[in-house]
Image (cartoon, rainbow, N blue to C red):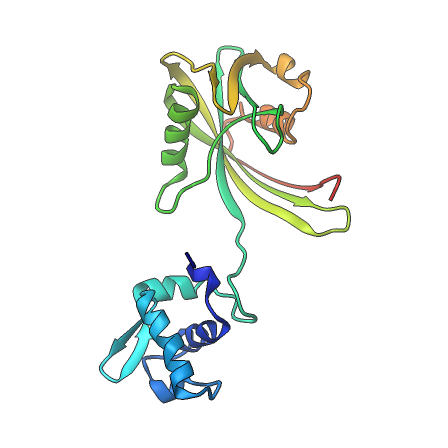
Length: 229
């Protein structure tokens, strides 16, 4: 099934036109001077997708179309790439931290803190509460946003491979029984010293451990070169 990101270039041109105009006539929209039947096919496709609405003799963006149009790269044809926004959870119980070993690809066998992507319409706090329960079976009495980390991974040639923002929370007052193993990973309570001695430790675990106990909110920006790309 085709998605909105698979829109034909003609359909992108129509959306781009309507971003900068109010409701417009059929003839005004056809800036490419295409044959009427050809142009009408693409305009109807946008109406079917719910991105454009016909009001009388004029066409305009729907609410969905305005939101989608806001993500268009108006200097080209396509969707503007956005940084990924996700979370990390650092559970603390006395002198131990909850670490997770990843047992699926990519990065099979690597150790790090866990979390999840922030879903559309969710807050970072709602995300970490959900992910903590799903990944470990635990709940926390207190969740504190401590660090906002911006991590960028580059190839050896300088190409940006991944751009991520992490909302990092400290979880305290841990309750319920830990799910130690699950499909795709396992959870372990370890001291800071034990964690730093682990093989295959994800980048940034050390800096997270160094800042997670602080009361002051921190912002960290990191750029990495990824080997093998």
